Image (cartoon, rainbow, N blue to C red; front, side, top):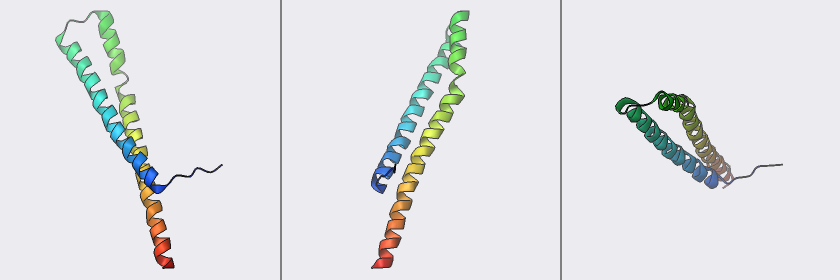
Length: 95
């Protein structure tokens, strides 16, 4: 089985992934700002503090997920660009 994608689609989907990773990261930041504000300004019961600590324990994983999605998007864009460059080099050599 072969996977076939046009370079234009690769570039467009790559850009979409990069944009979505940035949006995802913005939302992660908002969540952690809210949690930190809650922890630092409001009285928290021990149970609520434990939940806040559990939420904070996922931050590194979410940051890594953001980075991975963004890197994959960049990879797709670069792959599309490389295919287009190779196609240009081949066709310019024929003409």
